[in-house]
Length: 212
Image 1 (tube, rainbow, N blue to C red):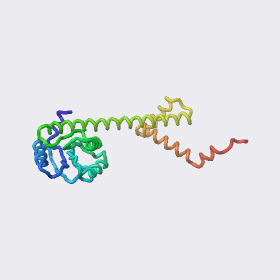
Image 2 (cartoon, one colour):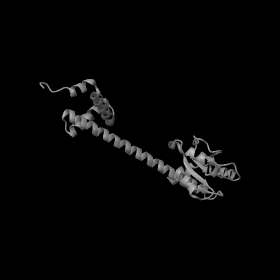
Image 3 (cartoon, one colour):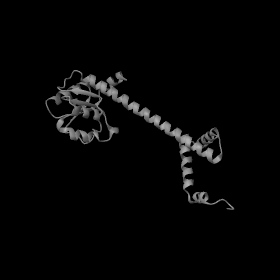
């Protein structure tokens, strides 16, 4: 993955959220020499830059409230984040950790090492995003298995089928309707719940046995 990240650096969209001081022009220029498309922004925006692949965020003491507000916005849209810090103290480190920064650039900013930090940050971020996708796929698969298991239990309870027969019944219905097994199971569960909620079903359950 690292070699691919290096190749992809050219054309990478980078947003530099940094005060317009003497360090910002050289930072922007070096990123452009690397091949990135760079936009400089200040003050701290209310939302993550929509088109940015990477954000270099200056952790400024006077902008902590704005940074905290930015960090509360949609985490799903958060790009690769590199923090720029001028000094180390507990408050600054807390912001860096809360921001989910995957790399840190220290002041005074020097061109040497910036390419390395950018590559490492992008690699770690891509690996983390892929891990999130794997977890989401596993959670979806587990939810599907639980849905199928619940539908099988309904068939076993109401039709007196064995677990294998209940599964095969679900499978045949899914194939006949050309839908995924999980969707067929969800439909059966929904139909069962509707039947249990119907007035007729409630009356039948509440009615005393014949002859009582």
